[in-house]
Image (cartoon, rainbow, N blue to C red; front, side):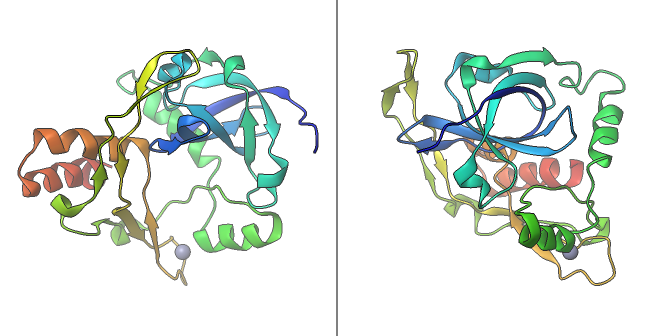
Length: 233
Ligand SMILES: [Zn+2]
């Protein structure tokens, strides 16, 4: 038994995962961001998908919340914090809307300040202090977007079951999607070992979930996903 010490910090939210069903917490999302006061990566969990403030937590929003070092988890991953959802306050949403002039430039500037040279360096760092978040710039020529199996064979477990959230509202459990999307790339260093990583990003999996109802032809669905998550990206 140990006491958590909570402090209010400000976070710039950078990434969100596709939600996960959790029996304990309902539908939850894992988010990664940057602590405003010391520019360190942070992972906050759990954020309940069905809570009213969740919808405001868009990528690149700044918010304040009480967070606490997740001591148990920190043994495994350095950046993990627990969050008191009810304390979340949005402080700045000027970087959310990418149609506003200058927003991409400002986002890029912030992320460049967080760049690591390679996955190899991040892995070494994991051995030292359990660093588990980072950003690198892959060699552009080497990037591949992979759909690991025929797109109409990707398993999707559609949930119709209704449960009640903390506020007593009826919510649908999220659809569970098989991990079938990944990126392969090399870092921009001489002796990179090449990497392949599963992508569990919110936007990609949500596009797949929605678009499969719109583009009934598997080839069309595949090319729409490729267009957005490879060509455009
Ligand atoms: Zn590498």
